[in-house]
Amino acid sequence: MVTKPAARAAAVPSPVPAPARAAEREAVDRPAAGGRKRGISRAEAAQIALQLGIMLEAGVPLSQALESLQVQADRPHVREAMQAILADVRNGSDLSTAIARCPYRFPAVFSRLLRAAEASGAMGTMLHRTAEYLQSEVEAVRKLRGAMAYPVIMMVLAMAAMVLIFCFLLPRFEVMYAGRQAMLPWPTKVALGISHLLRGHWMVISVAGAATIGAAAIYLRSARGRITLDWVKLHCPLISRMFRQFYVSRSFQTMGTMIAAGVTVPEAVRLSRDVAGNHYFVELWDQAEANLQAGQRLADPLFASRLVSHTVSQMVATGERSGNLAVVMQRIAAVSETELQHTIKMVTGMLEPIMIIVLGGVVGSIVMAILLPIFRITRLMGGGG
Image (cartoon, rainbow, N blue to C red; front, side, top):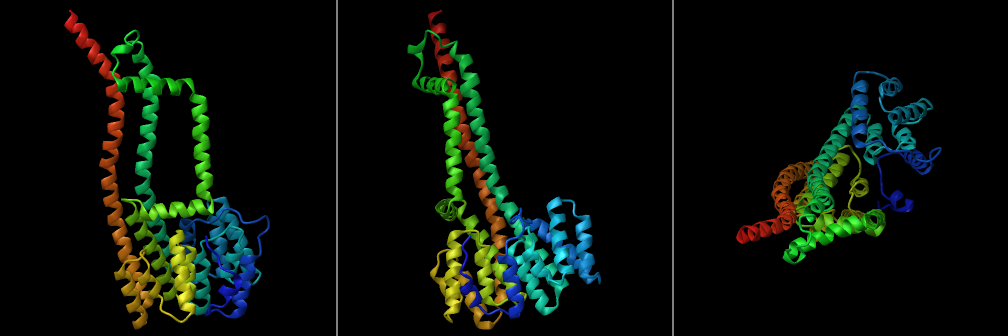
């Protein structure tokens, strides 16, 4: 994740009073006892926001609402998080500051929206809006992962099937080929060679495979590896359109929600950069933030980027001129989410036959390599009789 120096962040105007901003920065910058623990997922944060909003709108005091959430929490880390937040609130902290100070990290948008709600006094409404935003993001991520899970599962099953064929099925047929090596076609000889290699050096191959997977995982966790993976997501055939629409939907949904809540445009852009999830979209929002600080339009870097369509850039420019930027961005997010759903269905529908054809061809070729000598031996025996 790309971060900015504190001086740059402080230069951006905010509707929140300076003491509140300083308190939140202190809460965020100060490490919690024992360091940050596992974070609160977006789904868990959405549930907390929804239940807290309902209780506050019903007139339940904040401390009692937090205590109720702590009691009914069925996951230990959520219970501990609510306990820490409740303790800070009872000591006089604002809810947004208590959440920022919590040893369990909440999604960044959560405390930002609550901070805007505390400035406007519409805490219940803002909590409902936060829950809707987080739930929509969870649903989009779930659909995207579901679309990518199918080819991964198919590849794992295909690899398992090939290992079974080479290591267990082919050796049984090899007994039938004994003494007839000259009669074997080249596909069968290749299959037998692979079988001998896997069975004779399975430990070396297993260690090498595990080392390769480990090295790939370490590389993808590095900064350069994440950039490489982000580039693949945006340029790989079939899936690039799906990922572009996902990042556009997430970014504009975040900005639209934040601006509608009363957050300034520069701060909304900065938060969209923090939750972008892709290096190239982070660079785009960095440029957008620089343009805003220089007094230029938000739409200018969008027009110059290939990540965002010209239509979307034109809609943002229109929203800036009309003063309805929040509404325009939420409409862009809604359209992008609808297009994302259609694209996921299309990609899934295209991947299914492609995977079946490719994997069926590979497994079928191995099976034919096994059966070809049998057909040849049977034919020769029939002709000799």
